[in-house]
Length: 113
Image (cartoon, helix red, strand yellow):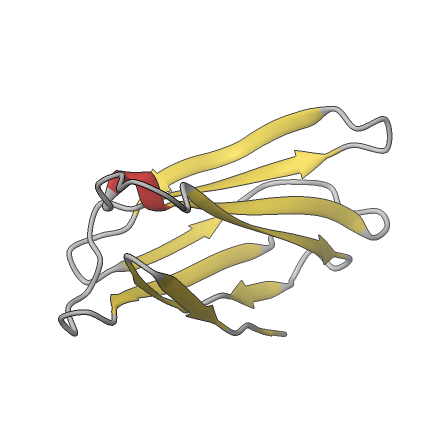
């Protein structure tokens, strides 16, 4: 079964970001979207979700980090969400996306098996 994990940190004060909604959506060949899960990070800023999906080829998914859960809208530029579009092609795939966020920026990287 494939899985997604993350660890979200706040670069402004060095804390873990609890309560941030992370949503995984499958994008079908016709562009139709299906939500696989939508969960919040725990007190340690972490989330680990397995999801049941028959992976038969390079399936396309979007992983959304809902920054509006934690940031107050300011005047001017405002980043509501960060969305990564990824592919899975193995039912045993594990995908980890740590992210460091602030009011004015974000940094991320990813690993997978």
